[in-house]
Image (cartoon, rainbow, N blue to C red):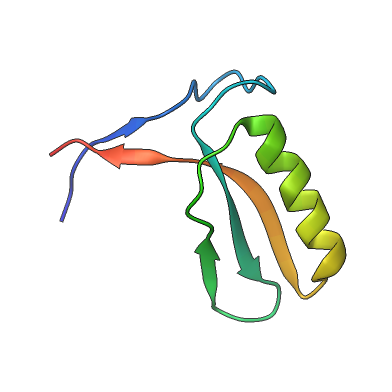
Length: 71
């Protein structure tokens, strides 16, 4: 089902203080992926992703922009 989505943050410029991000993850050698539900700023999400990456080397973590459905 196709639809449109609205970004919670600016998709071109990523400032440390921009809200609307969360931490997402995926397994390096598998097909599982997911994200954490709490919303935070880009800077907070990046720092949290780096902390989690150091603790769990079998996964990859990154700051992901939250997109809301608009349909």
